[in-house]
Image (cartoon, rainbow, N blue to C red; front, side):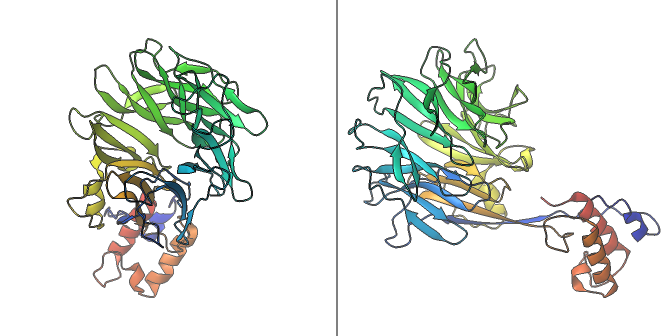
Length: 416
């Protein structure tokens, strides 16, 4: 509700005094709590920021040995057992919105004892292999799962025809279905909308080129049918309306880009560091976009707060909010952001998976319900009349017109 009657609070107009929401940040590495094993990755986070999944290193070689699921709200860390897969699953790729369905790549299942096969996990079933498309060889896998629908019933990824990748979509009812084969073959579906109707990844043209598919009809299309836009899609908004990735936009260097309503554009200047390729990975509901630059084996994570302005190096941005990350730390790869923009996950090559938590303060939200409405106005007026310190918006211990003006501005600005 806008403050349409707010002028009644002031008899002589409104003095504009900008009061913005305050943001603070904390940073931590994700570590297995019993033996202190480092996580090698943080691959996916649920929209509410509660559940995080990835890979765990148990022998110190910096290579994932097994998958994990972490309930970050209750701080419960679970190593996902692989009883039905003798050689195990090295990491979890994606998690359903309720945290109860996981996907990963299994080895040791009948028929593919030495090759990876996409698998799905629930607590009641354990790991179940999803199979593969006809003629799939060991290149080095038969199939790999990359993304999971919100309700955990749809999986997308790639299988093989000899050594040519083929995008697939899987449900329990249909089994594994091949997506339309685009460009010169070697397709992969890497990301998916929450309901599974929009899929995106790449097809092999002269090199990888961004590709999209309809999850129902299985039909696909290329971002650029001439293959000029080399690159690929990595992520999307939950409703599929914004697709993110990297591609060459009129030059030879891949730049961070987005497709909105079918129209592609670069994000900010295209990269954080001049001359470095860049990839956009995920977007929050408040339009914040995250991604990373890459050059050789080097990575630099970045953020575009609220989807506006220049890309900002993640370490510097988070430190400016009080996180106190050591200057020697490089947050290399950022994988995902929660829907509310408050939790970000990723990993470094050496120190493993990490999580950043952002806390937003909304000064005008007097009822602490995350919404601004009449009840906040009423609560402010009550506090103001009682000379309650919470209504002292200017911090000068006086309760006057300037506090009312500052409240109106904060209310109009809204909550992040």
